[in-house]
Picture 1 (cartoon, rainbow, N blue to C red):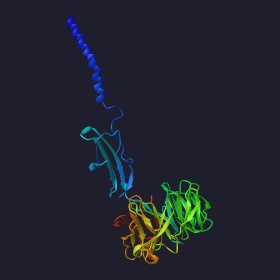
Picture 2 (spheres, rainbow, N blue to C red; picture 1 turned 45 degrees about the vertical axis):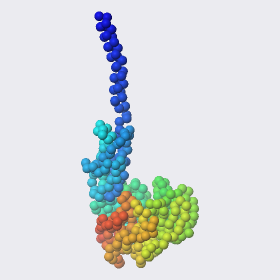
Picture 3 (cartoon, one colour; picture 1 turned 30 degrees about the vertical axis):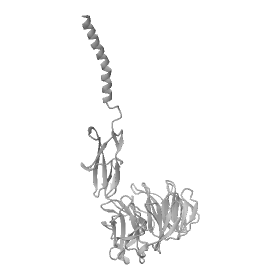
Picture 4 (cartoon, one colour; picture 1 turned 90 degrees about the horizontal axis):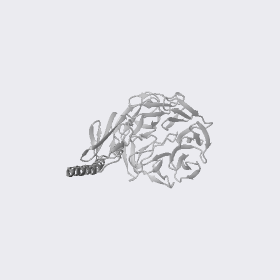
Length: 434
């Protein structure tokens, strides 16, 4: 009997000794709280809106990532990639569900997924019109991807030149009073105006939330865009036209001279040695460009060194020698390329691509027969790189009623759309993308 009790005691002791081992073994098998692999994001917000042909870079943003991860991207249920990142682009408007599935290879238990919706819409843009002097003031029309909205803003001055937007407001420049008008993009209500005592307005540059510069035929003036008040004139300016803020500097075409200012203090820095008649465009490599007929002015925005570059094949950058118009010199968003509206005579016709790295120029878009570019209507959509071109029928009088806007692929020059802009004396000055 004693032996039996002793044996039971030993068995009981062994069981107790084995219990911690069993518990420890379970603890090792269980994954600690908070260390499960998760997809924190896909590199874009859910519900983000892009335009057709606009690219958006998606990427797997993982938390507690495991080893030997596999990826599977799907669009509306169809797999499109097995890489850790994916470039989304669509030529068709609509809603697209993007789903990423991530798992540790050969371990389906680790599989996690995350989905977002991307909304693709047709490109919306504005056209700023000079208007018909003596008959109709400047105007703003909006294209919503399907149809035109005409004269969405009232009370503008005569001869519209340009407009700028900060995403909340639009600032519209007219040569005559009111020279600067601020409107809310939500509803298009007028917030404020500025009128000059003398001279005509040309261009406008937003520096930050409380500082901007208005260029006029009497010089460049500081503007408070919040209070819509005109400040002091910048030193050494007398007839200011095109303006550009790049890096630490502000570049102003004053007369035919490029003048450089400190962008923070507005102190005058230097005058570049090469003359220009129109500017500015910045290529991908960070170089700033202006133009003077058959020559380009190449500007280093850090050292402020500049040099002249002769254009090949007799190309001549368009510039209206009789009235101020915003520059038609534009830069690609995907290549070190300038788009040049060639002006063999007074008018600009064909568009060329000038490769700033090789110095070669190629025909980009052939002008419609008996049509020429009007105003500065060579504009690049920063969202997808498309180039918009406004062509008006050659001649006088009723010929000006016939205007069309062509949308072209920024790389190939292939025509993607032709928008009817006929029927009124719009005299389009600029195309603006929101």
